[in-house]
Length: 264
DNA sequence: AACCCGCGCAACCGCATTTCT
DNA sequence: CAGAAATGCGGTTGCGCGGGT
Image (tube, rainbow, N blue to C red; front, side, top):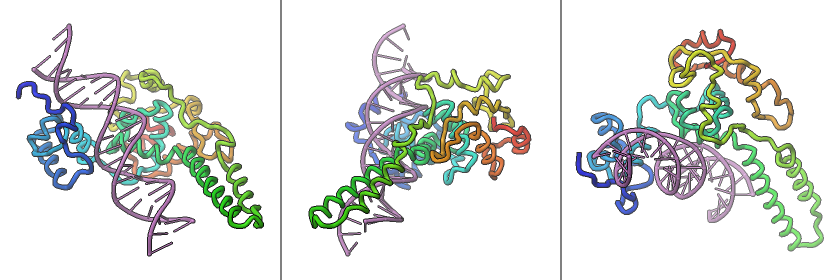
Protein backbone atom coordinates (compact mmCIF):
# COMPACT_ATOMS: atom_id res chain seq x y z
CA UNK A 1 0.00 0.00 0.00
CA UNK A 2 1.16 3.43 -0.76
CA UNK A 3 0.72 5.78 2.12
CA UNK A 4 -2.45 7.72 2.34
CA UNK A 5 -2.26 9.88 -0.65
CA UNK A 6 -5.60 10.88 -1.96
CA UNK A 7 -5.75 9.91 -5.56
CA UNK A 8 -9.18 11.06 -5.93
CA UNK A 9 -9.51 14.39 -4.25
CA UNK A 10 -11.44 16.36 -6.76
CA UNK A 11 -11.33 14.77 -10.14
CA UNK A 12 -11.31 18.26 -11.53
CA UNK A 13 -8.05 19.42 -10.00
CA UNK A 14 -6.53 16.07 -10.72
CA UNK A 15 -7.36 16.60 -14.35
CA UNK A 16 -8.94 13.26 -14.98
CA UNK A 17 -10.14 12.65 -18.44
CA UNK A 18 -13.87 12.85 -18.89
CA UNK A 19 -16.39 12.12 -21.54
CA UNK A 20 -16.84 9.14 -23.80
CA UNK A 21 -14.40 6.28 -23.57
CA UNK A 22 -12.15 5.50 -26.47
CA UNK A 23 -11.52 1.95 -27.64
CA UNK A 24 -7.95 2.30 -26.43
CA UNK A 25 -9.09 3.19 -22.94
CA UNK A 26 -11.49 0.30 -22.97
CA UNK A 27 -8.71 -2.03 -23.90
CA UNK A 28 -6.50 -0.79 -21.11
CA UNK A 29 -9.25 -1.11 -18.57
CA UNK A 30 -10.19 -4.54 -19.80
CA UNK A 31 -6.65 -5.81 -19.63
CA UNK A 32 -6.18 -4.40 -16.21
CA UNK A 33 -9.31 -5.90 -14.77
CA UNK A 34 -8.67 -9.24 -16.38
CA UNK A 35 -5.29 -9.27 -14.73
CA UNK A 36 -6.14 -7.89 -11.33
CA UNK A 37 -9.83 -8.46 -10.96
CA UNK A 38 -12.55 -6.02 -10.14
CA UNK A 39 -12.25 -3.49 -7.41
CA UNK A 40 -9.58 -1.11 -6.19
CA UNK A 41 -10.75 1.19 -8.90
CA UNK A 42 -8.75 4.10 -7.69
CA UNK A 43 -5.54 2.34 -8.44
CA UNK A 44 -6.64 1.52 -11.92
CA UNK A 45 -5.87 4.96 -13.18
CA UNK A 46 -2.16 4.91 -12.57
CA UNK A 47 -1.67 1.18 -12.88
CA UNK A 48 -3.41 0.84 -16.15
CA UNK A 49 -2.10 4.08 -17.49
CA UNK A 50 -5.55 5.47 -17.66
CA UNK A 51 -6.13 9.10 -16.94
CA UNK A 52 -9.52 8.36 -15.48
CA UNK A 53 -10.99 8.58 -12.02
CA UNK A 54 -11.76 5.40 -10.17
CA UNK A 55 -15.42 6.15 -10.38
CA UNK A 56 -15.28 6.53 -14.09
CA UNK A 57 -13.39 3.27 -14.48
CA UNK A 58 -15.80 1.38 -12.31
CA UNK A 59 -18.78 2.78 -14.16
CA UNK A 60 -17.36 1.92 -17.52
CA UNK A 61 -16.60 -1.60 -16.42
CA UNK A 62 -19.90 -2.24 -14.75
CA UNK A 63 -22.07 -0.78 -17.46
CA UNK A 64 -20.17 -1.64 -20.55
CA UNK A 65 -17.12 -3.84 -20.37
CA UNK A 66 -18.10 -6.42 -17.80
CA UNK A 67 -18.63 -9.80 -19.41
CA UNK A 68 -22.09 -11.26 -19.55
CA UNK A 69 -23.83 -8.08 -20.46
CA UNK A 70 -26.67 -8.60 -22.84
CA UNK A 71 -27.04 -5.29 -24.54
CA UNK A 72 -29.70 -4.89 -27.12
CA UNK A 73 -33.45 -4.99 -26.94
CA UNK A 74 -35.17 -5.54 -23.66
CA UNK A 75 -37.41 -8.56 -24.08
CA UNK A 76 -41.09 -8.51 -23.21
CA UNK A 77 -40.46 -10.66 -20.15
CA UNK A 78 -37.75 -8.36 -19.00
CA UNK A 79 -40.03 -5.45 -19.48
CA UNK A 80 -42.69 -7.16 -17.46
CA UNK A 81 -40.28 -7.78 -14.68
CA UNK A 82 -39.11 -4.22 -14.73
CA UNK A 83 -42.64 -2.98 -14.47
CA UNK A 84 -43.54 -5.31 -11.68
CA UNK A 85 -40.48 -4.73 -9.61
CA UNK A 86 -40.69 -1.04 -10.12
CA UNK A 87 -44.23 -1.13 -8.87
CA UNK A 88 -42.93 -2.94 -5.83
CA UNK A 89 -39.82 -1.03 -5.07
CA UNK A 90 -39.87 2.19 -6.99
CA UNK A 91 -36.68 3.56 -8.43
CA UNK A 92 -34.49 0.93 -6.87
CA UNK A 93 -32.69 0.41 -10.12
CA UNK A 94 -29.78 -1.58 -8.90
CA UNK A 95 -32.04 -3.84 -6.90
CA UNK A 96 -34.22 -4.38 -9.89
CA UNK A 97 -31.17 -5.01 -12.03
CA UNK A 98 -30.23 -7.94 -9.85
CA UNK A 99 -33.22 -9.76 -11.19
CA UNK A 100 -32.35 -9.10 -14.76
CA UNK A 101 -29.12 -10.92 -15.49
CA UNK A 102 -26.98 -9.11 -17.98
CA UNK A 103 -28.76 -5.83 -17.54
CA UNK A 104 -27.36 -2.85 -15.73
CA UNK A 105 -29.13 -0.48 -13.44
CA UNK A 106 -28.32 2.32 -15.83
CA UNK A 107 -29.91 0.47 -18.69
CA UNK A 108 -33.04 -0.24 -16.74
CA UNK A 109 -33.27 3.27 -15.51
CA UNK A 110 -32.96 4.59 -19.02
CA UNK A 111 -35.45 2.09 -20.28
CA UNK A 112 -37.98 3.05 -17.72
CA UNK A 113 -37.59 6.70 -18.40
CA UNK A 114 -37.95 6.40 -22.12
CA UNK A 115 -40.79 3.93 -22.05
CA UNK A 116 -42.89 4.76 -19.07
CA UNK A 117 -42.70 8.45 -18.85
CA UNK A 118 -44.85 8.74 -21.91
CA UNK A 119 -47.58 10.57 -20.20
CA UNK A 120 -45.33 13.36 -19.10
CA UNK A 121 -43.66 13.40 -22.41
CA UNK A 122 -46.70 13.37 -24.60
CA UNK A 123 -48.34 16.12 -22.68
CA UNK A 124 -45.13 18.01 -22.98
CA UNK A 125 -45.15 17.38 -26.65
CA UNK A 126 -48.66 18.56 -26.88
CA UNK A 127 -47.81 21.71 -25.03
CA UNK A 128 -45.04 22.33 -27.49
CA UNK A 129 -47.29 21.65 -30.39
CA UNK A 130 -49.84 23.98 -28.96
CA UNK A 131 -47.25 26.71 -28.59
CA UNK A 132 -46.19 26.15 -32.15
CA UNK A 133 -49.71 26.40 -33.43
CA UNK A 134 -50.31 29.48 -31.40
CA UNK A 135 -47.28 31.04 -32.93
CA UNK A 136 -48.48 30.16 -36.38
CA UNK A 137 -51.81 31.61 -35.53
CA UNK A 138 -50.28 34.85 -34.40
CA UNK A 139 -48.19 35.03 -37.51
CA UNK A 140 -51.27 34.55 -39.59
CA UNK A 141 -52.94 37.31 -37.68
CA UNK A 142 -50.07 39.65 -38.24
CA UNK A 143 -49.88 38.86 -41.92
CA UNK A 144 -53.51 39.27 -42.74
CA UNK A 145 -56.31 40.03 -40.41
CA UNK A 146 -58.78 38.60 -42.86
CA UNK A 147 -57.96 34.92 -42.81
CA UNK A 148 -59.96 32.50 -40.75
CA UNK A 149 -58.35 30.73 -37.88
CA UNK A 150 -60.93 28.09 -37.63
CA UNK A 151 -58.53 25.28 -38.45
CA UNK A 152 -55.90 26.24 -35.95
CA UNK A 153 -58.48 26.73 -33.28
CA UNK A 154 -59.90 23.34 -33.99
CA UNK A 155 -56.52 21.75 -33.74
CA UNK A 156 -55.77 23.40 -30.48
CA UNK A 157 -58.99 22.13 -29.14
CA UNK A 158 -58.28 18.62 -30.24
CA UNK A 159 -54.91 18.72 -28.61
CA UNK A 160 -56.42 19.89 -25.40
CA UNK A 161 -58.84 17.05 -25.38
CA UNK A 162 -56.16 14.57 -26.18
CA UNK A 163 -53.97 15.80 -23.41
CA UNK A 164 -53.95 13.21 -20.67
CA UNK A 165 -53.49 15.90 -18.14
CA UNK A 166 -56.91 17.04 -19.00
CA UNK A 167 -58.24 13.62 -18.44
CA UNK A 168 -57.44 11.56 -15.45
CA UNK A 169 -54.35 12.14 -13.49
CA UNK A 170 -52.89 8.70 -13.22
CA UNK A 171 -49.79 7.82 -11.36
CA UNK A 172 -47.57 5.22 -12.80
CA UNK A 173 -45.85 4.06 -9.72
CA UNK A 174 -47.01 3.50 -6.24
CA UNK A 175 -43.84 3.00 -4.37
CA UNK A 176 -43.24 4.54 -1.05
CA UNK A 177 -40.29 6.82 -1.04
CA UNK A 178 -38.39 5.65 1.96
CA UNK A 179 -35.19 3.75 1.64
CA UNK A 180 -36.52 0.75 3.47
CA UNK A 181 -38.78 0.05 0.62
CA UNK A 182 -37.29 -3.29 -0.09
CA UNK A 183 -37.58 -4.49 3.44
CA UNK A 184 -41.13 -3.41 3.61
CA UNK A 185 -42.30 -4.74 0.36
CA UNK A 186 -39.79 -7.37 -0.24
CA UNK A 187 -41.96 -10.26 -1.15
CA UNK A 188 -42.14 -11.75 2.23
CA UNK A 189 -45.25 -12.87 0.58
CA UNK A 190 -43.11 -15.33 -1.23
CA UNK A 191 -43.11 -17.27 1.96
CA UNK A 192 -40.48 -19.79 2.97
CA UNK A 193 -37.08 -18.27 2.76
CA UNK A 194 -35.67 -15.28 4.46
CA UNK A 195 -33.65 -14.29 1.48
CA UNK A 196 -36.84 -14.36 -0.37
CA UNK A 197 -36.38 -13.79 -4.01
CA UNK A 198 -33.23 -11.91 -3.31
CA UNK A 199 -29.96 -12.96 -4.80
CA UNK A 200 -31.10 -16.25 -6.17
CA UNK A 201 -33.45 -16.75 -8.95
CA UNK A 202 -31.01 -17.24 -11.65
CA UNK A 203 -31.24 -20.75 -10.32
CA UNK A 204 -34.36 -22.81 -10.49
CA UNK A 205 -36.05 -20.87 -7.82
CA UNK A 206 -39.47 -19.53 -8.46
CA UNK A 207 -42.55 -18.69 -6.55
CA UNK A 208 -46.20 -18.61 -7.29
CA UNK A 209 -47.68 -15.32 -6.52
CA UNK A 210 -51.01 -14.48 -5.15
CA UNK A 211 -52.80 -12.78 -7.97
CA UNK A 212 -54.90 -10.67 -5.72
CA UNK A 213 -51.88 -9.16 -4.19
CA UNK A 214 -50.32 -8.35 -7.49
CA UNK A 215 -53.58 -7.07 -8.78
CA UNK A 216 -53.47 -4.52 -6.06
CA UNK A 217 -50.03 -3.53 -7.12
CA UNK A 218 -51.06 -3.06 -10.64
CA UNK A 219 -51.65 0.55 -10.82
CA UNK A 220 -50.18 0.92 -14.21
CA UNK A 221 -52.34 2.02 -16.98
CA UNK A 222 -51.12 1.67 -20.51
CA UNK A 223 -54.37 2.69 -22.05
CA UNK A 224 -55.76 5.86 -20.67
CA UNK A 225 -58.50 5.53 -23.23
CA UNK A 226 -60.08 2.25 -22.32
CA UNK A 227 -60.40 2.55 -18.66
CA UNK A 228 -60.11 -0.94 -17.42
CA UNK A 229 -57.13 -0.79 -15.22
CA UNK A 230 -58.61 -3.25 -12.80
CA UNK A 231 -57.69 -6.87 -12.52
CA UNK A 232 -56.18 -7.30 -15.89
CA UNK A 233 -52.71 -6.06 -15.38
CA UNK A 234 -51.85 -9.51 -14.20
CA UNK A 235 -53.36 -11.24 -17.13
CA UNK A 236 -51.63 -8.89 -19.43
CA UNK A 237 -48.27 -9.76 -18.04
CA UNK A 238 -49.00 -13.44 -17.87
CA UNK A 239 -49.91 -13.39 -21.49
CA UNK A 240 -46.81 -11.48 -22.27
CA UNK A 241 -44.62 -13.89 -20.47
CA UNK A 242 -46.27 -16.95 -21.87
CA UNK A 243 -46.02 -15.73 -25.38
CA UNK A 244 -42.50 -14.71 -25.01
CA UNK A 245 -39.50 -16.65 -26.07
CA UNK A 246 -36.05 -16.56 -24.65
CA UNK A 247 -36.69 -16.90 -21.00
CA UNK A 248 -34.19 -14.63 -19.42
CA UNK A 249 -33.25 -16.68 -16.45
CA UNK A 250 -31.03 -19.64 -16.16
CA UNK A 251 -33.75 -21.70 -14.59
CA UNK A 252 -36.06 -24.20 -16.15
CA UNK A 253 -38.65 -22.32 -18.05
CA UNK A 254 -41.06 -25.23 -18.05
CA UNK A 255 -41.26 -25.09 -14.36
CA UNK A 256 -41.93 -21.48 -14.64
CA UNK A 257 -44.74 -21.79 -17.05
CA UNK A 258 -46.29 -24.68 -15.18
CA UNK A 259 -46.66 -22.68 -12.09
CA UNK A 260 -49.18 -20.74 -14.04
CA UNK A 261 -47.67 -17.89 -12.28
CA UNK A 262 -44.62 -16.19 -11.85
CA UNK A 263 -41.07 -16.01 -12.29
CA UNK A 264 -40.48 -15.62 -8.70
C1' DA B 1 -31.14 23.44 -47.73
C1' DA B 2 -30.91 24.76 -43.17
C1' DC B 3 -32.47 24.57 -39.08
C1' DC B 4 -34.86 22.79 -35.16
C1' DC B 5 -36.36 19.46 -31.99
C1' DG B 6 -36.83 15.41 -29.43
C1' DC B 7 -34.97 11.00 -28.41
C1' DG B 8 -31.83 7.50 -26.59
C1' DC B 9 -27.99 6.68 -24.29
C1' DA B 10 -23.44 6.94 -21.94
C1' DA B 11 -21.40 9.25 -18.54
C1' DC B 12 -21.30 12.72 -14.87
C1' DC B 13 -22.47 14.66 -10.25
C1' DG B 14 -23.61 14.74 -5.48
C1' DC B 15 -24.75 12.23 -1.73
C1' DA B 16 -24.95 7.91 1.15
C1' DT B 17 -22.89 3.89 2.64
C1' DT B 18 -19.17 0.81 3.32
C1' DT B 19 -14.42 -0.25 3.88
C1' DC B 20 -9.81 0.90 5.14
C1' DT B 21 -6.07 2.80 7.97
C1' DC C 1 -12.86 4.39 17.18
C1' DA C 2 -12.49 8.38 14.04
C1' DG C 3 -11.53 10.19 9.82
C1' DA C 4 -10.43 9.34 5.13
C1' DA C 5 -10.97 6.86 1.06
C1' DA C 6 -13.47 3.89 -1.88
C1' DT C 7 -17.54 2.25 -3.63
C1' DG C 8 -22.39 2.33 -4.81
C1' DC C 9 -26.63 4.56 -6.05
C1' DG C 10 -30.04 7.44 -8.27
C1' DG C 11 -30.93 11.68 -10.62
C1' DT C 12 -29.44 14.44 -14.25
C1' DT C 13 -26.92 16.13 -18.20
C1' DG C 14 -25.25 16.69 -22.70
C1' DC C 15 -24.07 14.88 -27.12
C1' DG C 16 -24.95 12.76 -31.52
C1' DC C 17 -28.36 11.40 -34.55
C1' DG C 18 -32.62 11.10 -37.24
C1' DG C 19 -36.91 13.05 -38.56
C1' DG C 20 -39.76 16.85 -39.33
C1' DT C 21 -40.59 21.65 -40.83
